Length: 103
Picture 1 (tube, rainbow, N blue to C red):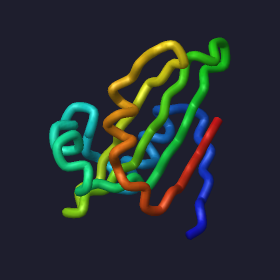
Picture 2 (cartoon, helix red, strand yellow; picture 1 turned 60 degrees about the vertical axis):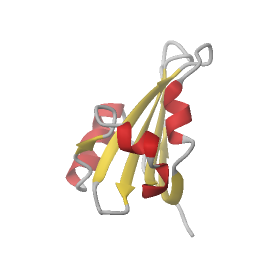
Picture 3 (cartoon, helix red, strand yellow; picture 1 turned 90 degrees about the horizontal axis):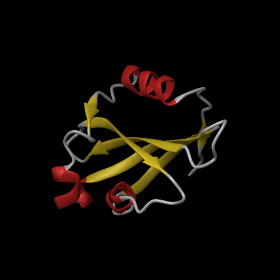
């Protein structure tokens, strides 16, 4: 399985590109089913960003697909000094075919 690497300048640019690919559902606002049934979801895209002025300013954008065909995004802000529930949610999802991007 090969990875495709995309480089987008910002989180908002990655979100826009994913939206154009049909990833329109907001899993941040509707994460209940992911939490209860992570086996129904796979991560197909990952984009990671670090802040220019502060390395603790990090964000990851995930393109997620359900086994029923629902495509959406999940954005996780991370920091080296914080305990983050977002990681616990994402870590339970299968990673199928990864298209990664990092800046």
